[in-house]
Structure formats: C-alpha cells, structure tokens
Amino acid sequence: MRGITVTVTNTGTSNVVPLDQYISPFNIGLGCVVVSGSPTFTVQHTFDNVLDPEFSASTATWFNHSDIASQTSNIDGNYAFPVSGIRLNVTGTGVVQMKAIQAGIAS
Picture (tube, rainbow, N blue to C red):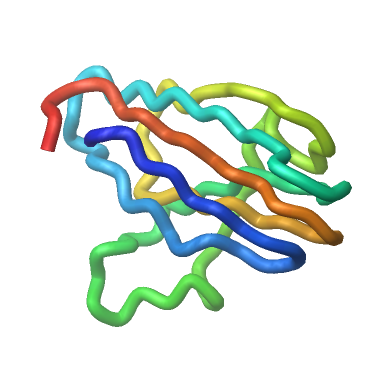
C-alpha cells in the first residue's frame, strides 16, 4: 500500500482505510500530527471485513490502538499483526492528520 493520509477536522471519524491482511510482513507504520487546535484523538482498528458491500463503519466493532488512544500531541506507532481496516477518531476542536504506510507490494 502506498502511503495514505487522512485528515479529521473537529469531532468526527475519518473514512476507513482498508488494509491488505495477506501481505507478509503485514507491518504498518502510523504517524499522527496535530495540525491545529487542541483535539484528542485515537487510532482505531477493526477485524470486520471492510471490503464487504454490506460493511458499515457505524455498526462495525472498533478497538483502540494500544498506544495511540486519547492522545493530544504528535505520536507514532505501528500494527505488526493483521487488521482489516483503521480509522482516526477525533474529539474536540482542531485538525489531526494520520499517515499510514504498509510494508509489502506498492499498489
């Protein structure tokens, strides 16, 4: 997967970033940057099939990243084991960008 950037302004969630769980190694590097304001943010992941035509982010089961949860300043982290999709969840006022790069074949 080529690097992808998602941005959330004020309270809300980003679109789901689908990941390729079949790439080995699966490794994903993440970086979150507070662009402005004083937001609190969490990176979340799901094991639900995000490519299923009936998938709905609002009814999916989301888990908070073990390190990037309730953060208020720039932080990086990773996923070493497969998940189907990730998103950025922001509360408060401000702008947060999440950049993700997955190891393996570039698409």
